[in-house]
Image (spheres, rainbow, N blue to C red):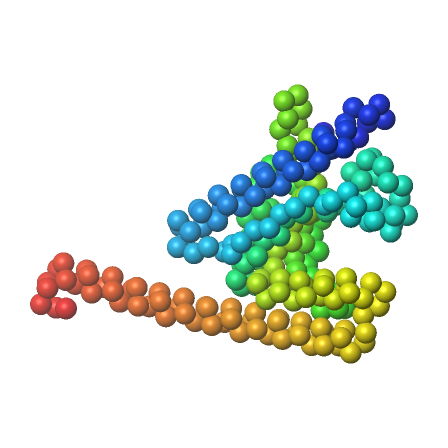
Amino acid sequence: MELQVHDDGADSWEEVMLIYDAALKQINTKLEILNDEFQHVHKYNPIEHIKYRVKTPRSIVKKLKRHGYESTLENMVKYCNDIAGIRIICDYTSDIYRIADMITNQSDIKVAAIKDYIASPKPSGYMSYHMIVMIPVYLSDRIVDTKVEIQIRTIAMDFWASLEHKIQYKFPGEVPEHIQEELLENARMVAELDARMMRLNNEIQELAGEEDGEAETRATLCKIDPSMV
């Protein structure tokens, strides 16, 4: 069953927030396990770090009002997709899609929606990969499918987004045009930097692979005939 708030008040604010918090903990644990497995198999961690949070009551109320809904628990659960949010920061753009695939392949996670702001950035220049997923939370008397928003971005994208958020907070009405233009130009620079760093990393991996191959060949020859090395 999906997370629901009943008319008889059976689900309190505290219980609903507990369920969202539990959903975040479950996804965070899954990601840590996947990252550890990737390190074990490929000697590489696609995830740099993870941040997660449950939206504050004030933020939830503001969002509901902004969209014309009454501030009720039922509306909160129904219309707010980002009450439970987790942000995954990685090194390279290729890691973003690799991580998204790993999440999608989890049998108990259902992907409800995807917004790829990397392939199609927002007009402001914002780039990130967003997923709305449903994850089961196992309580003592029932299983509750709970919505979680996942954002996946590179370190550079996260730095840009953090700055934009601060600017939007400083100018809640409208950001000055020259600052918007500067932000957009910086977003282009971030995209170019990510592309160049990914190309550099690919080249390093190829060279490292060649060196590993040569070292393995020398070790094999040494076992056959030490004089050949």
